[in-house]
Structure formats: structure tokens, C-alpha cells
Image 1 (spheres, rainbow, N blue to C red):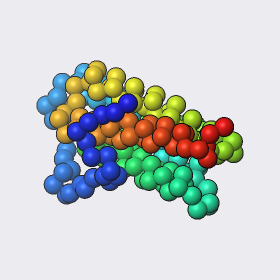
Image 2 (cartoon, rainbow, N blue to C red; image 1 turned 60 degrees about the horizontal axis):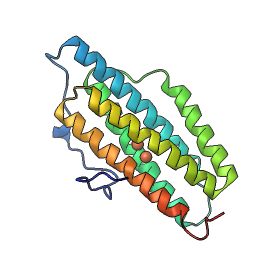
Image 3 (cartoon, rainbow, N blue to C red; image 1 turned 120 degrees about the vertical axis):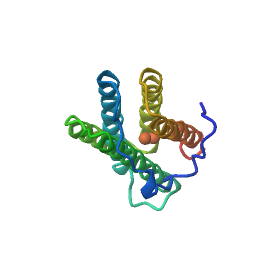
Length: 176
Ligand SMILES: [Fe+2]
Ligand SMILES: [Fe+2]
């Protein structure tokens, strides 16, 4: 699985003052409604993603922990991306996100208890769902161009996560 045209080694793209904008003026209300639902969904998913990685990290000095920390940082960027876009449009995050905070915690915490293979398999499973979800939202919603670019970059990051965890799963020390 791959997605080209984005440098996914950039974990946190620069965002300058001039990149912030008030959005949505003059858009028809049905378009705004779809954008709101899409941003709330993405923001909620990313809330979960941050927690999955956060609760998978242990104190051990390992390559896996290093990679999990960078993935967590990347998901924190995604969370910021969608939180900023929500407020630029005059929307608020979904109340449901608190539930997904708990879901993310559970995925992260319980996979950590089961060990490296469970961590990697959980992450691959969740990231594949995320990539598909991103794809549907990209197809079905009439985004403004800047928001679309951000969603595409973030989707490319999720492809990158899948590739990284799949490669890690093949390492001899992880083999069952
Ligand atoms: Fe993400
Ligand atoms: Fe991800």
C-alpha cells in the first residue's frame, strides 16, 4: 500500500500565521454540513489514534518505542490539523470524541499487555480502517482545496504507518 507525492518523513509540517483562515463564507449550507461531519469524524478518529500509540509505548529502550513515539507525534499533528479546521469553519469537535478517547486507550493499553505482535497487528488493522475512511471522506465531500491537501497528506501518513508496521512485523525478533 502506498500513496505518492507527499513527504511522510515530515511529521509536523510547518504552519504559519498566514495559513490560518476563517472558512466557509458563502458556501451553501448542505456543503457546510458535510464538511462539518467530515471534520468531526476525522478529529474523532485522530483522538483515538493518538491514544492508541500513547498507551502502547513502554519505558523500554527499543526501536519499537521510538517508532511508536514518532507515530504518536504524527497523529497529534493530524489531531491539530482537524481541530484547527473545525474552528476555522466555526464548528466544534463532536462530543462523541470522548468515547473514542476511551476506545483508543483500550486498544493501546490491552495490545501493549499482549506484546509486540499484538501492538503491530492492532496498529495495522486500525490504520487500514483509517485509510479507507479517509478515502471515502475525500471522495464524498466537496472540501476547500487547502483542507483537501491536508487530508491527503494525513492519509499518506496513515499509509506510511501501515508500511512501517508491516515491515516491523517481518523482523525476526517479532516472528511468532
Ligand atoms: Fe492520523
Ligand atoms: Fe496513523
